[in-house]
Image 1 (cartoon, each protein chain N blue to C red):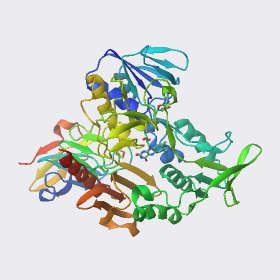
Image 2 (image 1 turned 60 degrees about the horizontal axis):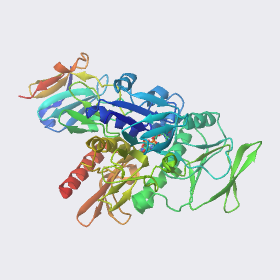
Image 3 (image 1 turned 180 degrees about the vertical axis):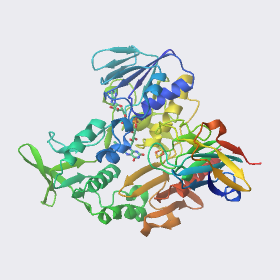
Image 4 (image 1 turned 90 degrees about the vertical axis):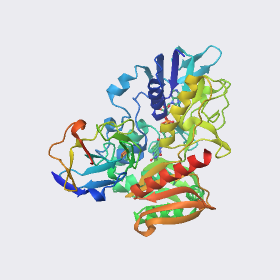
Length: 394
Length: 112
Ligand SMILES: Cc1cc2nc3c(=O)[nH]c(=O)nc-3n(C[C@H](O)[C@H](O)[C@H](O)COP(=O)(O)OP(=O)(O)OC[C@H]3O[C@@H](n4cnc5c(N)ncnc54)[C@H](O)[C@@H]3O)c2cc1C
Ligand code: FES
């Protein structure tokens, strides 16, 4: 392989480039990114970045300039890919440039979901650095009321950041218990309690039907029960959709992501996918799965790239299932693959003190771990979980 | 020199956090002692809470790995190295020389 294009220049794209060079690939490497920025880290965008003076743009770069230069790649930033032409063997960019290539890494992640309808001033989504800069500007103007739509991780983190800025926040959530499918009802409640404890009210099971505006700017959020919540700033945290539009017509299987085998390889052996956009076959789950977590986008590219260079699937990806969130003064960590019905044991600390480690169990098997503010014991438990899984699969 | 702990309190695979002018983490990596800044250069995690694997410690929050010999991270999200400090064992006690932050090659001590 002499020419490889990596499409998407965020975490998964950068890790793919690094993995290629580490594996000794010394051919041409083109990095195609829709955003004009060098690779940066997204998790701070809902956390420190929104607070004045913390985690400035340089601080969130994923790599220092020297390390980026050492990749010896041709960076095409600010121009999205619009087409993968498998017959011609090219990636086509929005400015009509063709990039001839023998191998492609798809690392295009996803786009934030918006509310239906035209965009309204004061209403934000949060996925990119530019989104975060715009939101930060509106929050720092000191709005009287902020409404966040969606009590998932990003919505919850933004609520916490707003509180740190001293703002009044209400969260509106369509589901009755949004985290229960993932964490189980008990631990979902522990997370949910963080909001009222920190002065944020969350309206569960409440649907948003529309927005009110004054002079083209948002002034309120209308709820299904007829209420109107005043809001000068609205943050929409209702998830993302994988960025696969540019692959329409490529012949790849697109269904809530790019479908790949267990080694992140598409039906074309010279096209692989990694990160938030990849929906890979997982024998463990007996299903195609797509993850939207940092560690997945960090770990997956090495596997994808090994298979790309080999020309066939020689190694399979196994997710650690690890993610974290930071809300108020709570560091939340989770790992594993749990079911809401798994038995939960508190192995250290206490949920009341917001400092504890819990493990999940099914039969005689530990299926996962969850912790608040207990990184040391959580990390040891997570490593144990990983070792158990390796024993079982070997 | 700051006394970190007694050597018996730092068996292989363990770590201690020492509060001095800056917090320092001391590790026993299979008999070899290393001291580095305790605070991860990415955010504020305490590296003494991290996971020791050979002569690398993995940050307990976002899994940046630091080489205990050099302080250099092996990959994101950390970009900057932590400082390394010389470790001395004397009369069964472990000491860290925090005033004299040095390059890695004299930042270790043999546990003999
Ligand atoms: C605000 C926020 C907070 C988060 N916090 C956490 C957290 O605390 N913990 C955690 O585990 N995870 C967190 N995540 C998730 C984590 O950031 C993602 O899992 C990770 O960024 C995925 O990396 P990726 O490279 O696969 O995709 P992305 O980061 O989405 O990057 C994809 C890149 O591809 C580009 N692109 C898209 N289409 C094209 C195209 N056609 N041509 C060229 N380029 C294209 C995009 O512009 C983007 O730059 C957070 C995410 C967000 C948005
Ligand atoms: S705080 Fe150590 S890697 Fe993030």
